[in-house]
Length: 252
Image 1 (cartoon, one colour):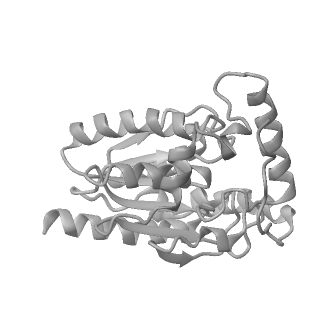
Image 2 (cartoon, one colour):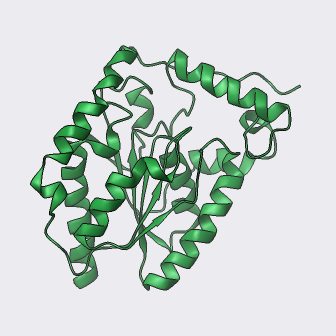
């Protein structure tokens, strides 16, 4: 029998702070820079990867803003992010390759929470396809450094996987051979030519913010809930800076 899932340092911020994501969304929706961003003719293509137990639709606000700004976007093709990490990365990689070939330039990958973990491994394995990696509240140093409520959800999903429910990770993924490559790549140093940014919040009520501090990425602190990372105005300001840098590199 596989070893039980082990959790690291859990966040100490009260979970009810996550309720502010609705306020974060309301503030973003009222921002003219979100509704009518300045269109950039050389905006980079962006692939978006949602978080744990979320699907592509959870990043629709971000995807819409990117499109209005001028970026071609691609979804990860995830309805519910609960699959074995190795299988998930393999499927996203297929989309990444097709997307990059169609765009004719390297792609920016933005992943929220678990999506940032998948994005990190995706970028590590495909440095020729990915120019920039942005991780939004992604506990890449310890994926199980989460609050007790989230850990309970992880264990419940793993039990379903243990029972053979398709498209769901199991406890074997934590220690077994199926995700051994993924676990190794999650710890491996990022390529030197990859621009990586780790966005984190000390008021994150889901994951430990310390677990988000990827050593190979530029750390950027924002005041945001975990669930609201993709609808937080401060995060969008960070993304503007990142995307503008991509624009300059492309145009020379």
